[in-house]
Image 1: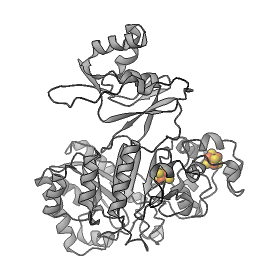
Image 2: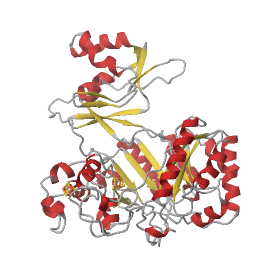
Image 3: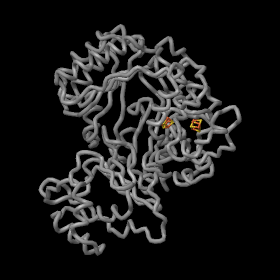
Image 4: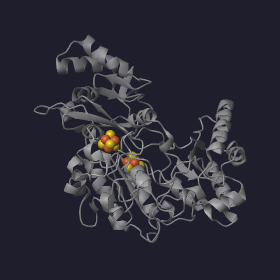
Length: 490
Ligand code: SF4
Ligand code: SF4
């Protein structure tokens, strides 16, 4: 059988290692996998030829027995699960069958690209030499005013990125080998030059998936389709179809409900895929609200996913969390309801059921430790950057203009200059001696391993302890102090 490296993945060389990253795409993992560069060299041979021919070539190129080549590479042929081979980690379906009548012939990378002569092999994840993911916020303008809004909109609603700046950013990102380029708002489709931006992104091979709350007109849907941006689904936020509840949540006029329903029907008509994100809050945390959505979604033909999450405490909406959070007992009922729907097999995907957000103040040290040790790595400044509408660069979509995390300004510097700047490196390679004494991190014996590359969630720390306490521990860390802010679902 003929095989290629799955076109959904990109291989990139780093000092002493190679990385595999999924291209932009709905439901693809964002994380990076590190592999030995020798493996990367071998993978370059998978260019659509018969696997037996490829094995022979690899064997002769590296002067190793063919049995050894087979032993190492055969498990990677259309692997269903993640494969660990020594310290190298391969994502699912890294090598996939190639059909010359259907698939585009991949561009062959030469194995020499991954040679590592004179480099020390280091298979631990480390800060990349350039980002692979850019998230660009074009505007903070919205058509709704959601009760749980997490965006820093106050005083920033009129900021818009200039077309010249976004063009420069896209071209630099492409030159640096950025793999994923996402657009964000506010409402991306309220950005006056969105068509030009989407066109440019697709020309560079990026898939500009967007998230919307704005009802779409048929004209906009036709334009979106014509731009070729339909590989990934559009994400639509919809919290309920009970009109009075929706008005309370979004502060919209009554015609909103009719228009947003019409948007779904038009997307079905034009066969444009979409997924829905529902945020639970005090106005829609009932089974009836979810039922209103379910009854409507059952009839949809282009729906590809439905995720339900409980609203987190917002750093910016100026409201006490108690005013809008979902009730934990109602969230549990909704979870049960969704589990039940999932067993009925109405959709060809599983609905993501909501979870009750932890109250870390009530958890034992052992429970916190389990959660802390399983924490996701923070991609900000490790492999990703977030760009604000005024061209300022930060590390995370929820930190906005927090001065401690602003790495530079694209009106004055290039993306690479900002990535390589002392500010970016100092933030990433934080020194323990720079942590003020009132934080347990200042004298923690686990500091190096904790802060080496996985880091903590800065956003959660600030949410829990306050804007000026960015140097406090992650709120799940067993050494973290009691959380003074009311941010749990109770
Ligand atoms: S977050 Fe916890 S483990 Fe990490 S450095 Fe701070 S106190 Fe230590
Ligand atoms: S700070 Fe937290 S939310 Fe932001 S990128 Fe890092 S882990 Fe994600």
